[in-house]
Image 1 (tube, one colour):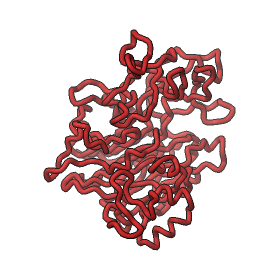
Image 2 (cartoon, helix red, strand yellow):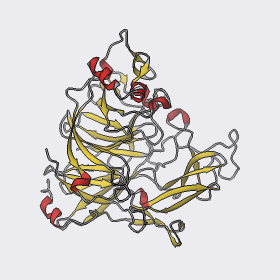
Image 3 (cartoon, rainbow, N blue to C red):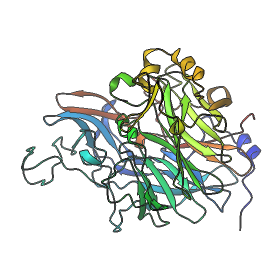
Image 4 (cartoon, rainbow, N blue to C red):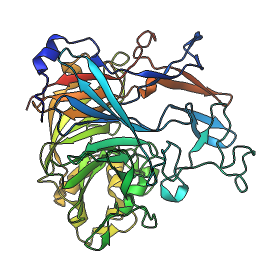
Length: 458
């Protein structure tokens, strides 16, 4: 039986200065807090900020997603990478319930597992299946290797990878109880059953035998150019249309397509996958600024969506910070998969559509005015309309706005990513300097997962 949603006005009456906190446990408290060396750092679980999705049958419950686990930038003798501070962490989906008094209770966690039911990790993928030369380091600063009892050697004892490792970022909760999750490294789209066991996968790697989505006798793959995603800037947001037929995902920012020359671009890509026909479409999204990122999407219909765009700045530290929610419409946008080869345009099997021998990312990075060139070629980006200026509407102090919960009354639940309440500030002498994550320059207000409720203007 579908429950009536909690009254939004009641939540506004009980408005807190920093939203409604999600409960958490302490995963680790053994490290010193670099901001206050006499205090211990609390690594909190927590960390549910990657995305949010409505429970299909319970109006007051919502799912949230963690990312790969607590980690810090680190550079050791094996190169640049990440230090995994809770090495046995398993990414998971959390189920929470919003109470009438504005409090949030945790119902359960669903740990993510591979096809054989073994818990996955957040470790890097092998190079051929989404790896980005990222080196994983242990808590003591040593490279994590295939044989932990032997020293690192590129030939005899190489860096440890996990073929099933994910950095989950996008979440779609289906009416049958299963989930699709997108990751920002491969990128991968993975289908999990209600118990969190992998049942299907779609990525851009045709030789990956886990790509088991076959429709009309054809293997469904992401377009090859999606392998050009920037590390840690891949498939950030995911949703499914209300009729449960089409996955819709968006890349966080411009890709390194064909290389870093495409990186500083205001162009990013939306991909749709029809799960009945296998048809794939691509649409262009124009960021307000090249430095912005997208971080959440939820479907209103087969063509309209709410989308988060923001700048990752802390509002208490930078008055120019922006956190925006747009309503977008893809119905009049150009599916660039359908553009035919011509004198000026070519569909390249490795880098996608090119115009005058440049990728779309390259031409926009070279000159923002080249959006007009695309327009003259009748290549239209998706239409976008601002429906919530978050910082003008809420007292929102966080840097990352990533979770988007569309509620039955039309309001939106917004969830921040608190990074397990920790951050790295610098790397000195091959040691990461980790501290509690603070919202203000004075380092007095700690970040935490919090839920906000807002009503779009349209």
